[in-house]
Length: 477
Image (cartoon, rainbow, N blue to C red; front, side):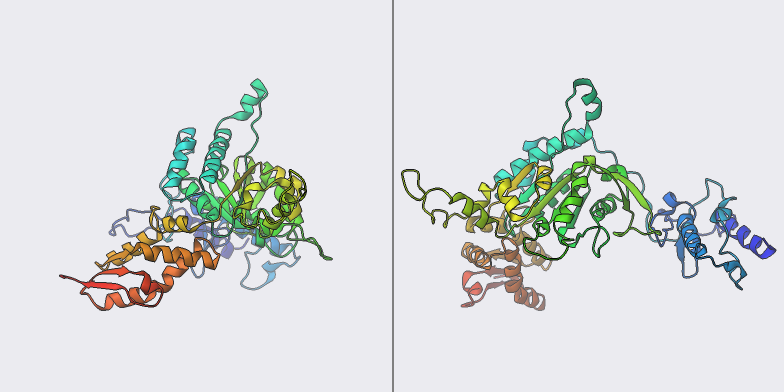
């Protein structure tokens, strides 16, 4: 090693150990900041001292060493190239003189966590009736679904937070996982119910889309990417992530393809690979990325105590259920008419595992989802209640927006009924409510800031039917 290399190493060590004097006249900021590795996104408090590259790019020791090793494995000796004498160095040489209590530079804009999140205990999990009461404040209807999910979540966290393995050695009783399968038409509140549940329990939540998952080795997200999203939601805290919730939406899209001549890389094979995650296993997941590669650090996560909730609309499943229910005889005393279920609006309540297998779900996958929750389609009365009753109701959101302009917004009951009827015709569930309101509130939200004398606006049914206009009252009248 020549003198130039030694000078470079000594300068790097001196900079990292904080030996470079700084001006003491400036007041130390109240909040400290730390460097973050450009490759693995780990902060300096976890990855160790960083190397600052040109352009204010910081790299940790591990990522820099991986880069050098991958380049050196090609067989080229970069030390013989002019102005590149450091490619064969060991990155530990840069930090051998760095003390353990070296001061963290205050340069980056990412704040350091003040303290680690407190561990989840059984006292933090409310009883099932309390969970349902809190869900009632945000979710309208779906009483059976809220009751089933409250009990399933409560039992799951009793299993996750109690040392059941130790208890199993004493009495031989092993508590199994209670993963949940949610079935309901689009817009019935599957995703909203899970989001509300995770927010009330204050646990990490990751929402993944099954349509992007493919078999390992093919273009798309690997199965471990769903756990990687949960780890990111938990702030890369493995212990906290292992007590979180993973919601896999559009699970019906990975059903077996009935007629295909090509390899089904996004159907049955994805169900097979999800089995190990649902049942509980130890997996290596990439940190800060959805794809594994040599430059991405990995973390070991145990999915044994992670609650998996799978949801889907399952189109055409109703026809399978109707076909099974109408297979009875059409003659005799116990006969049933073929059209007896044509007026039935909630056929999902009669679903069985045989129906799901006929749809394309494999029995091994269904066996790992023992709790089945069905959501009812939303009728007119439920849609009207959704508009105005929840804490985060859509009407309340618009009222708050106009209150910022000191304008009072009022919806007549006939107007709310018309919105609910229009939403039913669009057949997209509660999502249609937002779309309808955005359409009719556009002109009002645009015109109100023009005139500061407007005091209140009343939305009427003739305005929604485009046969009249809203009632506007000026201030002082």
